Length: 40
Image (cartoon, rainbow, N blue to C red):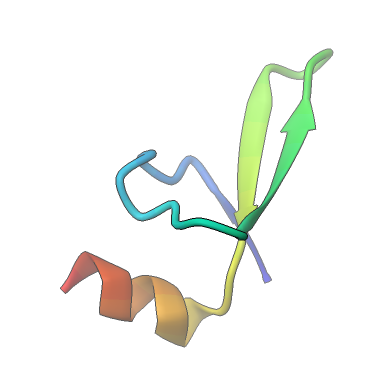
C-alpha cells in the first residue's frame, strides 16, 4: 500500500521509498497495520 505524505520519522532501515521528482513526492511502501504500529 502506498501512503502519501508520511512524516519521515516512521521510516526504518530497508523500507522502500518511491521518489517522484517531477511531482515532488515521496511515498513509503508499508502496510497500513505496520504504519499504525510505528506511529503508536
